[in-house]
Length: 126
Image 1 (cartoon, helix red, strand yellow):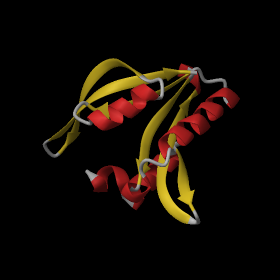
Image 2 (tube, helix red, strand yellow):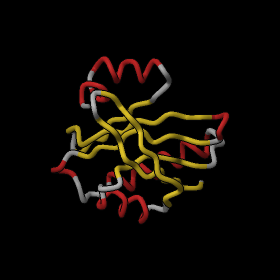
Image 3 (spheres, one colour):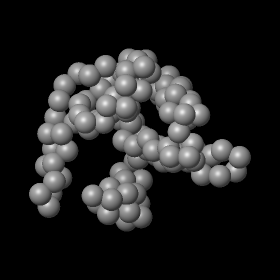
């Protein structure tokens, strides 16, 4: 799964498709990253990825990143942010709910090679 979604070729292809990647830094060190895709026709922004290195968790990187993404939405006249999160990822779900996201539906996606993603789709209104 890492090779399919997080490898250099995968990220390069995502950037070619319009995804924007942002690096989180703390004291000059990489602390994590996020990837987004604006969907102007839908007036929405897809939060594809948000990863914070374990050593930097609990320092409000996620909330700061969501605030930055909301500002991007305002500048681009987008009215919602949406994301997918694994149904079993209770800690991330709790964080997203705390940040104003709500579960809107569930989706099961076959990603090949015998793997499926069993996710909630969550949205936050801007």
